[in-house]
Length: 447
Image (tube, rainbow, N blue to C red; front, side, top):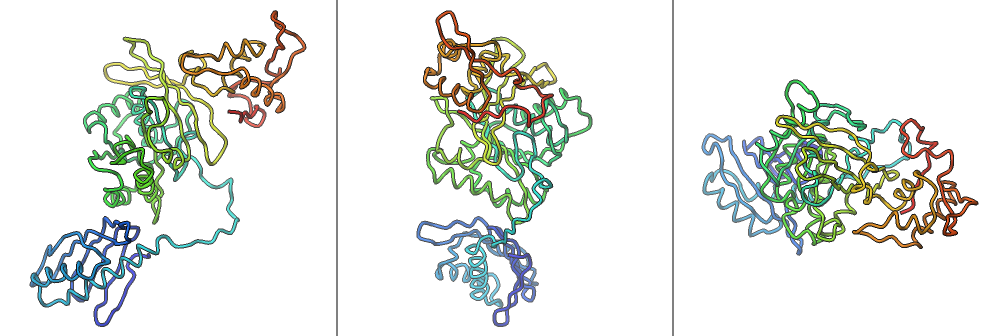
């Protein structure tokens, strides 16, 4: 719906503005305005909405009525009209409420307009990343992990980089306006953390991160959030965390999809929001709740930590678990070091921490093991064994065989003392060498 579309029904002209569940109507001749939002459709296709009527008429200036009505119910509309008639009897409120309901319902049910895809987009010219390789433009990134692994610190670090437009620790960052939606802590704690991160980065001046403490589910408050996003010209929304933002059982597909659809609505009608969502692991160590959390996100990273007791530093590993619009990214490590007034962030190699290395994909762990020297299947299997996860010899053989097929693993003529065939990386392979052009590096896609 285009803003300020004009309608004429009988002798009452009115204008409808907005869309996507947030509408403003005005009757210029009557000097009446209405705001309609918080639309919800029930299982039997009734549509209910919150309606507020205001007047600039001499006999009834100001707020007239606010209430929740059923737009599809004649009785509900008449009840509201009668209530308004008591406030100002000189207006045909039955006609006003009929026009309001029909116009809003028509736009609500049409949804977004169809568009023609001609296949002539300049792919290279299209912006893709907000934070490379974590956050794609206009898409959802999900970062999940157990409690206390540093997920919120990581999200707040990314928020500061986006706000300052600073590329740091190997991350390429586009300057962005950030809205931080917080169900976990409070404003004073977030303000202190942002200050510590900025101090660690040596940033001067002030930040411009918008903060909103949240108490109800994101979908329940989406109309207000759309207004905030539009008014503040927000580029990136950070949700901390999904469990509370869903406002319902996270195992429920309906609850998760309602949250996801609300979040995706922030990139419609001229809005261009990308989002970073924080979530928790279940007791088995996987993503908590419905599988739709995973399917709705375009990029998924799992966060693990390595930290010795009583240390003022925390090493965090980010492990890619999903990438929809491109190849899977690589694991990334950061060291967070804390003092009284700052938190500094340094890029670290995940392979330098045995505690983090065990959470790599099997293929990456095999590549890391072979970079230390030739090994046989049994030795590789022992190298990959961890208290949390057992790797079978058959899986190792499969990865090795597929690696040979791709020319990424060499099978040696030599054998171990136990008579095992030895495997190694090809002589040209330079594992994780940032100076090697991407097209010259081996591409591993084995799980």
